[in-house]
Image (cartoon, rainbow, N blue to C red; front, side, top):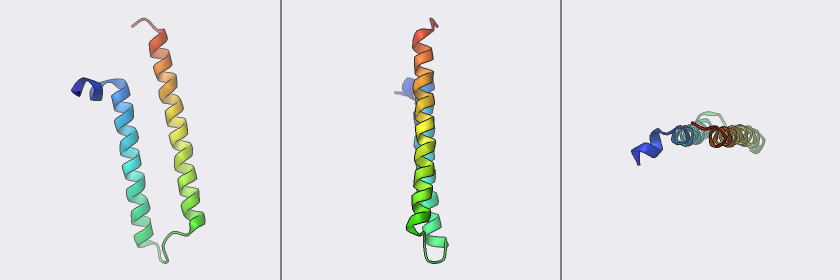
Length: 73
């Protein structure tokens, strides 16, 4: 198990999970501190932006694994 978590892909997965936790916490914090809470338009913009980030992150992850599988390491 430790070997999986310390591999390159494990680090990618853990950092992606960490970014999700931070994002959800930030949404919770904003909903509590912004007067009147987050409007649906604000929330939609934040979620779409985060999903774009995750899409690019996942694409980089797949490219990285493709490079690793083609090279003889």
